[in-house]
Image 1: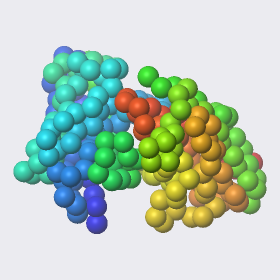
Image 2: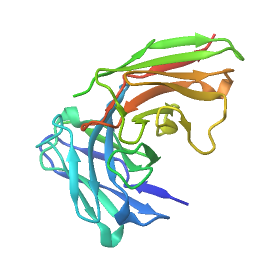
Image 3: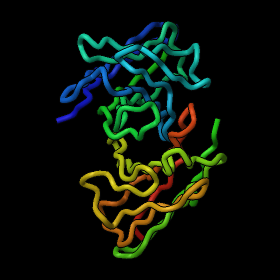
Length: 121
Length: 113
């Protein structure tokens, strides 16, 4: 079974750093684009960035450039989303997603369970 | 960014009746290279991740009931639930995946009347 399993909920203070993870299983991790989607409390879905684990090629949204870093370690089938200095406005659920096929422009057919990140002083 | 706009924001439909959600992209998402529209539909129930229902505008994902159908081309698309069931209560999102950044509509909440 194809699965994305994300790391657990986090509670952080403004200014702190954070790295959340997403482990893929049941498929060849390197071959599929994997990415992150944000959902702020009570709000809709926002596409953040995707990465191709085989080459670490990335595509990202200007809305999130410079705010977060996406990375992947193909040796352990894990993707990451990282912040160097959190803000209260980063409070959201972050979903890990995988493309349905081998291209960067394919629908997200696999979703992780979500990681709740709470940033509060 | 490409703006994707859904209508209505919410709708209430009686059980067994048809529900229709519209989605409009600010740019054409049809590719003449492969004859495909880069448009997907997702269903999200409370406290769950979204679920892919439809991709390429009209292809149903495996396991999705055939009461869900997608149509449209270019900039205008529709998701239809032919006979609403209680388990279809959810928020529905469309997404264009042709342009980077990919963008979602704001969501449409479907409830039972």
